[in-house]
Structures are given as structure tokens and as C-alpha cells.
Length: 182
Image (tube, rainbow, N blue to C red; front, top):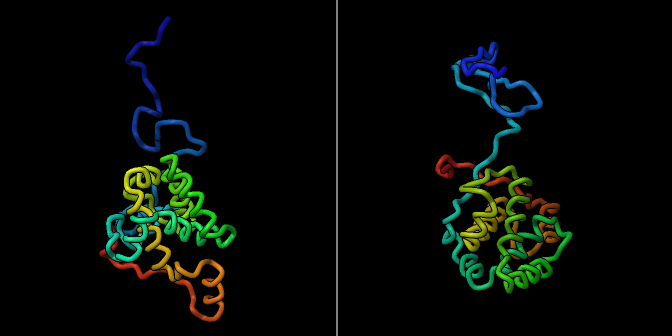
């Protein structure tokens, strides 16, 4: 009546081509290069952050502003990420009001996710919301430095950055150095 515990599972008894769990497409191992190393698709790769989470003192002025009034740094970040559709003052004020409730980090973690999506950055050192809940000032400083290293002048806002770019002062990718990896 009941199947025996030692039932033969046929084609699934080996591990070749088998991937546990529900999948929409059959499992296919990554392609191997001539050297035998796996090659992953470019769509799955992400870039490292230009600076580390705890490198706040790389920009001491921003570190001080963020520690004293994080709503200013958050407002500057959000204006750039929203491409000028919202003002620095408006988002900074909203962040400040949320600071009265104790939940500004939950609001700012969504902007970290947005930044990672726009610039294809890795989710490091852990999940975005955990970074903001436990290291809010460091996370804001890292995001500020990332935008600054990509050529944005954080003090002038989105519109002035676009005008500067159209005059020839292009916003660029930061240089990649092997020392920037984890």
C-alpha cells in the first residue's frame, strides 16, 4: 500500500542536471571556459562599491554632516537618485520627520536598493535594510561617496549636475582598483 523507503528514483538518483526546488526552466550548469573555469552570464554580475561601508573618514566633512544631521545627506542622495523629480529639501524633511518615529532607516534602505539597481552594485556587506538599520550613518556616507565618485557634485543638485555634464564635465564611472574588492 505504501511505497518502500528504498524506492528507485530513476533519472533523479544522480546529481547531473538535477536542481532541487521548483524551477520554471531545467537546471543548466554554467558554461565552462577553455581553462575549465565556470563562466557566468554578464547580466548576473555586479560591481563592487567604490568605497567600503566603514570608510566614512574618506570624506570627513560629509561624515560630520551625516552624524549631526543625516537628513541633509539623505536629501542630497535622494535628489540625485530621483533624477531631480524630488527636491533635496523635501526628501530630507521627510527623512527628518521619520526620525521622530525612529524609522528613517527603513525609508532610506529603499534608496540604497534603488542606487544598487541604477548602478548595478553588489548587495554588500549584507541586505540593504540591515545595513541601514544597524549602520545608518555609515550607509548614508557610503552612498554619498559612491555618487561623488561617479562624478556628481553633491552640493549642487541634479539640475546643476546635468547642466555641468552638458557643458562637457561628464559624470563618469569611478576608476576600478583591485584594492576596492572585499
